Figure 1 (cartoon, rainbow, N blue to C red):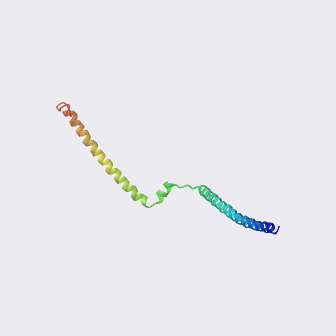
Figure 2: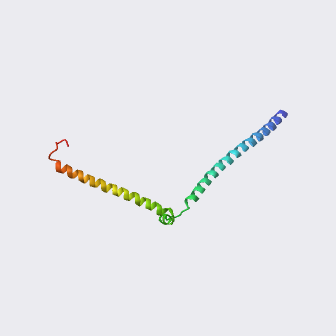
Figure 3: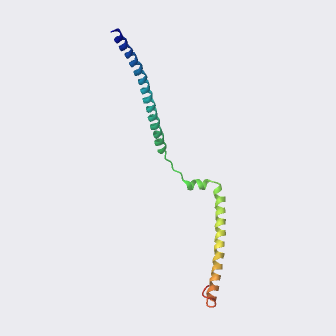
Length: 112
């Protein structure tokens, strides 16, 4: 009978120890899981708040207020004028060669 009591008492002590250990492990698992979920939701909350920030920028007004706009516009106009002059020269050259071709088309072979 004494052995049975000792055994049962040891069994109770062992069960309390294992229960205590298991509850600590279970608590840590739940705590870490909860922390991960909380951080995950906090990330979505921060992202949702960032999306709500709206703004409007008038680019044309900003460009007109910049002092570099005038010099950049002058450079663009100069490049555009140079390209326009080059295109006109090429057009004149093309028309001259086309007229020459049409004038001498009867004298050339069919390969040309």
